[in-house]
Length: 629
Image (cartoon, rainbow, N blue to C red; front, top):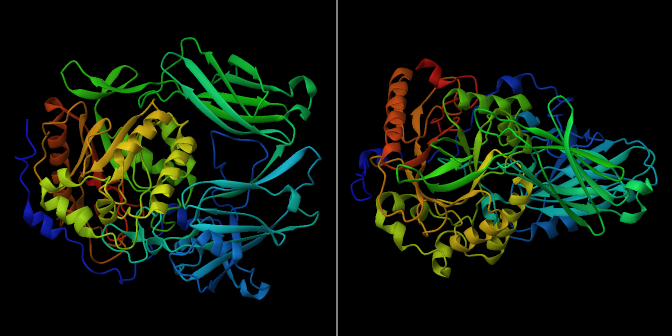
């Protein structure tokens, strides 16, 4: 078994991998096969939340008008107050057309223009709805807007929101008129200059940082609901066939729902593939929450090889929501070989993972089509991977749905950020060159939090709030087997406290507390990134499994399918054959460590991104580099 001390650093590889200063080079526009066929009148029309669907869904994606307006606000200002206090521009200012939900920086938006930190981006469109009955409400949903926004219906402010990765909604019933209704959205985004969660985005892009995007970047839609309706459902199904559902409700008066005989009852039906109801339960609703449990006999278990899903019907009065669940268990324990390993449904599972950042050459963080999401997952399954690590991004919910139905495990990162003064020395060069620095960085001290970009109390509060919301947002997806909290020190703070919080909120999944370095001796994994040292399983992991959560990054530049004439990666190859041979050898090498105690690995990465050409797929998804192997 290798050790930390014997893992030799390959200094020449480190030097070759140093990012070049070329952020000012213009990126070439590359269209994916789906983007090339985009119909702006029918874009991403699938229901955004397959685990919470009503028939009344109405997409607002498509052509809107927009305007960029200078604003005197400082990048570090309270952007939610900035957009709330801004005045709607005159009609003649809205001169440009934008395709929603693509951000203006993305080619598929039709704009290809960066929103600057001292600007506001205004959106406008009209929509028509059927007249609501007295017992109905109309909800306006945004799946994600980056970063702060104010929403107006018929010139009235209906609400504001901040946070670039989470969905939100407003009840706009009181603001509607009988004729066409006007929807206006104001957005502000300062990216790295704002000191908030931003993931891999930077206005000053380059290397591992990608072009900052802004504005609406996930679906916008309308939904008609009864006066009293289900607002949220937490679904937990284990390998013993036990299904538990906890629900929350909203309404003017729960007791006033009709018909009277079903007004105070929440019901759950489990439906088989042939449409047969195989189990049902219900409870009386006397408050705004309710919880039920039932047993599905001889439940088929979900796994990558058999991704069995059961349909669910959730009913409350006149409200009906369709969802689904899967029965499975995940835990960490000692296997028969004496090493700690991931167990799925009571059986040890070696994790063969690949890093997925969720970027597209023409849509940026927005997929050009729903089929494109499934394409990536299927391609990685065909390549032999059983897990995708969703990296520093909360993806659109349809991606997790496709992972659920296609049998792809997911390790979900939390979104990080920090101020513009986040230095490469702290999160990259020092930990790469000096392994000893990992043990000396306690993330609970103010001085170290400042070094890691987490010195701001508002940033720490936002990270904590977003982490909790992510557990609610994504917690029903059986594909997710673990949460990855902190990555490579970016905005890292109080990893132990964060681990305890997540464990208490979701004890059913594993936790990768600190991925990369600056380990705080917590969580289920000792999780290391190893691009520049000999691959090995290190000693001294305590009661945790040893996990290489990033490695590889082999680079192959594909002419006419890359964003720049120059490439960035960790080890470059001149031709496809050499790349393929190196890739096969590296995967064989890391998998040989399983018998020495390795619990799993995550190879970097699914696709090229901008000048990073270390993907298995090209950035435009037209080339699969493994097909030449």
